[in-house]
Image 1 (cartoon, one colour):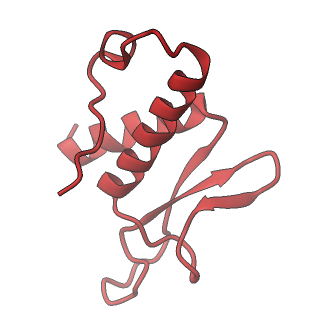
Image 2 (cartoon, rainbow, N blue to C red; image 1 turned 90 degrees about the vertical axis):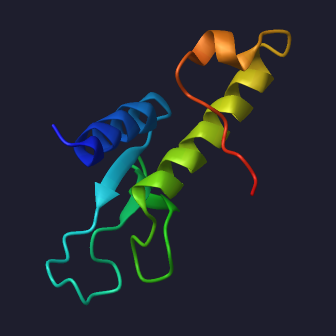
Length: 97
């Protein structure tokens, strides 16, 4: 598996843990705006959670960062005394540049 495939599989797994589904644009034209981009959908209501106005639009890294922020917010609500690094392990919080 390539690094992209591994990252996509990881993002799909984390999204499903939050009740979301990762969707990849089906555009096949490399000149299309949404080509190779992703979005997050809530399957129960079939509504977009993370998307641009025209559909998909986010890179895999941006989706992963969004899921990481959502995961840390979820953990801070449930167990404020716990350290996120010890619960999540490999997942690192997004850095602000």
